[in-house]
Length: 409
Image (tube, rainbow, N blue to C red; front, side):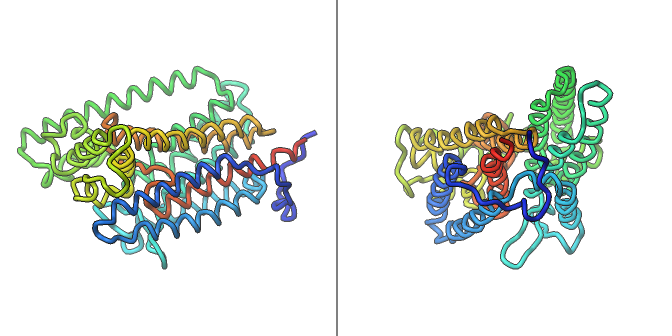
């Protein structure tokens, strides 16, 4: 018989035998982290930047977070999911208060701490993951009425952090949450009619965004505004919660030569040049010209466009290596979800895996011109302290699911 969920203090930490540890994911994570440090160094070598050393420090702290979370029985998080969710909402509110949150480039996304700037939207990933799994594990969804009740509760629990993140604004952190939640709903065997309805709503939303962006394009033409001086003029008259710079990113994807050719359009064009010029084996580590000479701006090369640097300097084979390591991480997450002996562990492992898959797909697709520029970072490779710590926390949960799955035997 399965044991009840452990909530007592003595049950949180348990001695585990060696064979309970999964080593595939940590090996893949280590490989990705080393690649990230190496190529962050390459992007900053011309200006003697210390980003790579700070990234190494973030990864060291992340390793500690990973180990602590992995040593905690994942079922403990079920008992504190609502408290953790509430604790993660507080910084999302604080960051919007003038004088409390740090403002940069018109966004209120960071809280200044002693050693680094903390981005609350990154911990929101774990909060939404845990609260979604908690609601699904505690609520029956056998009938349509029960399903609607659960969906209403989820809409409120997920909608609050998403709206707060959009208010910052931080579209990239908000768009990765719905696919994670939907994957967890699918694993919970929600009626398929719900997913059909969700698909219809998604098509409607995309259509509305496209229609609004087309109106914005005509607005720009009729008023003669350039990209630099039209910011905020159209968004005040639109009822869609999009910022003008976000509309410019969509338009620059369609027509980069006309819309923001020296901003987002420039970044995308230089990224395509970086990826295309790498060939089979690349130009060699630290020998790439796009980032070293500043054509691919140094403000984005270490984080959003780090894959472009890898593709230029290590070519197709280097890119394939990165994709293979991510493939190992994704495959192993699905494998651990299948090994889990309870729904809570399965939901956690699937949710984390889909969240990482979204980051990888959108980031790489962005650098090769398949989707608009969104600024989504690449897990364990892109520069960023809050994001690294969030990734390590989430993967620690997956490791915990693997370690404590035998408690049910």
